[in-house]
Length: 550
Image (cartoon, rainbow, N blue to C red):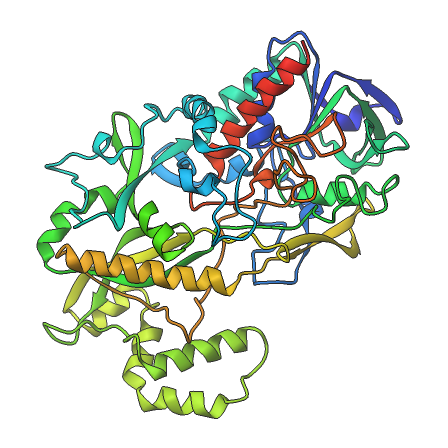
């Protein structure tokens, strides 16, 4: 059943057994897992079935760290949540998202990755990953390359040794979540979905050991309360810490924040497109279909990417890293030389430094030296600028083109307590303090990415496949690093309340009837898109709650 919360009488109290806050990916799956149970479920969604500007504006906030998307554009505040943003085109009526489990090493406590380690290993989560893949309709569950390649038509690269490997990403559709699963949830007898219901405070008893009720308001002005036996927050890694920090009537620092951890360890997957892969011969393009096209194998859309092996991650003490090969076209000045800026070009390096500084509204102290460097090699500078011109202009400049691959990187971010979500001073239309996001990347993040690309270049060359020409070095930071709307880590999972906000069962430490679902509980991020792990953890949490409700 669906109820428009704006129609409820003012100050009404809703009684239920389970209350879920947020009808995004995690919230929908949790509710679906509860269909037909002997307990009642209340699902609260801030928005409606379609987006609207006034509700979406509640997500506005301030970015004070590394440049990031505007916060009201980085999330979707209506039924389905970020699932609505699964937008990768697969075919005419198929929009989806990349899906892959985290690697086994991502769950480990790695000495070279501060604050790493999950409370359990990957084999523990594997049965839930299997169920998640059934839910996402991307079975069979295997990710072994041999099960997805065709040795004659779509072979994987024949690397010499085990330093670099091919990994498979599948693509899950958003349609089951937004269509059939949404229908199942909203028509379930034991589940009531309230739309336009904004939770603004979590109330507890006087010792803050038990959540007693939620304060919920509508933009139109009416308010109501929800009482439940157990509450699950599934509103995302930015909004959940905002709600916990705002609920400070009993505990001044906010709920679950006795050790100042709520909002810390915000992680994204740094995305950047830096570098070209130049195949040694044109014949190699006959064997790259596994990597350069989304294609279906046994009805499942997949693509191959390149990653660093676990052995090398340990030896070199690196973060996890993956690259995607995207076909592109570049110019050439002769039969043997690519028209592409060299790694040691002072002109290009100075151009990038100036571009980065000017974007921040300032000029470097050695502005004159950088300007002289640019003019000392105008060819390299011109090439760098022209690389962004549309292909038809490039063809007009030079008919002699060469096929290459653009390198799209997605890397793990090391957990960083100073990368965080806090409350600002501005308030939204409901009177709630808006968030401030301070996304911070460390030198380790950059150094690991540089070394990973060096290793991939070496192994492509050793295998006789070609070379990487990489626009990344120790002097110039990656330009235009952005994220993938992958918000993780702000209520991290740990068995010790001094190290995490929730325990291994996703229960907030010290509050037995308050749980958190979604990527905010991730202690580390790996490189894999978080969607499949979100579903797996939601299924796992649902099983735990069902056992408690018996």
